[in-house]
Length: 113
Image (tube, rainbow, N blue to C red):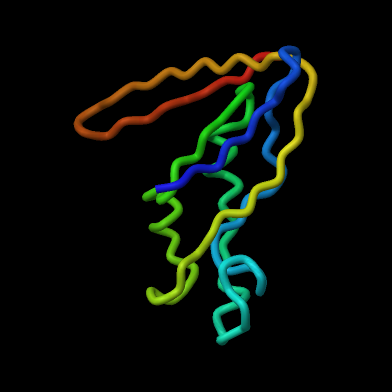
């Protein structure tokens, strides 16, 4: 098991995820030559945005089942996570309201600056 840690070191800043990809993006990261699997990739920004944006620090533990379920590459290839983020000034507060009705649940989250 491994993890990706992203942190804003200034206490007045929070994370803003800019890009997140999961797959085999290029030769050189765990792969020395292209065996035909380079370029199998999926955009996972929405998932990482939910996990990390608005927080001061975030740890993404790998393997992550939600990322694994995207299956961008053939089973015999090992995908990796690539993220890009920036630290922005301010504190974001998230408020989520969840409700369930007969086994169906929904959540609404509101961001306040």
